[in-house]
Image (cartoon, rainbow, N blue to C red):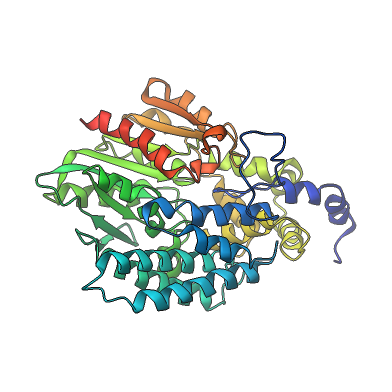
Amino acid sequence: MKFLNAPLLFLSCSSVALGSSFTRSRGFHSTKRDNSTNAGSMLQLSSDADFHFEILRALALAPYQGSDIGEVLVAANQISAGDFESYSTAFNDLADRVHDSANAIDTKSYPVSARNAFFREATYYRSADFYLHGNWNDSRIYSLWDKQLSAFDSAVALLPTPGERITLQGKGFKIPAIFFGSGLPGPRPTLLMCNGFDGSQEEMYHVIGEAVLQRGMNVITFEGPGQPTVRRYQGLGFIPEWEDVVTPIVDYASSRPEVDAKKIGLWGLSFGGYLAPRAAAFEHRLAAVVAFDGIYSFAQGISDQFGPQLAAIYETGNETLFNNVISQVLTNSSFPTSARWAIQQGLWSFNTKSAFQWYKQVQQYTLDGVIQNITAPVFVGDAQADMFFPGQAKMLAEKLGDRATYYLFNSIDGAGEHCSLGAAVLSAQVVLDWFQGIVS
């Protein structure tokens, strides 16, 4: 790689540090953990730590119909560490097989079997898409997403109370959402829920949505700018003013007879653990907020992961130098999957081709100056082995003071991964019991 002498010196000194420390906002591990010395360590599903996390992510949806364990493990065995194409191919092949199976089922005679198959199909097409965002011209970014949307719609149409897709108007953008009714009479407590840096609203149904429905409450999932469907079909990256997304959802929820307008909560997952508290600082009709896992300053978290040397280059204002350093990470396959993916996803989801501009945008994502305006009680989830934004959840809870309920999920319980990935039943028990206690 030809570059100026100074940047080459910079790379020789710190590129490895950049690659191993730069995390994504919803998850990566820079090194393989030693299971023999840590009783709380989880069995690794891939020698590539980032692939381990994503395979676990698919497995973790199994309790609420989002996957089947054996299918995912077979796909995992087809994946080569660090090879994005092998990851996509393994899950695409699995999705195609499940698609064929789902379409062979008579939905009128066997609606539950068909629904389960369609849900799994949707999950696997989402997984096949996950590592493709480095090439914005890759047509699979759209074709795979269309397939997952179609499969998911086929599934929710077969629920006892079918899910209802709706589109709401935001400030200069449209908000895709899905209403899942409890099917019970009278107005019910309702949880609004959004995903984070890279996740979809469809995934949220399996992460926590079905668990909410089982408890007799309603669910409304949604996406805003920067999130998968809005980014694809409206060409919009993330915006700091997440209240502009949430307020129209609260308006809509309050208008439905199935919803008790005084018992509306907001759940934010991963980067959503920043977005939800941000919205709550301006939208005061929320009865409760869940930040899972909590983030006080996304800006600080990203700055910490870039490291002081890249941050220093940014401070000089030298956009060309900054972008060239990042470019070398993206084109060097020896860098950890996590670093390459995180940058690609950051550029994609913030809708910019310049890493410098992405970093600049990120600086706006802090609760400094607004956290005092949050009036609702907030559940702040934290994970013992979360290496992505260490200390952020505790900071959020401390800043909130007596408005916060802080809960640390432990590795020994299988709940120490980012957002307690793999412990969906346990985390639902803890968080939803808290929410029901708030709105009862």
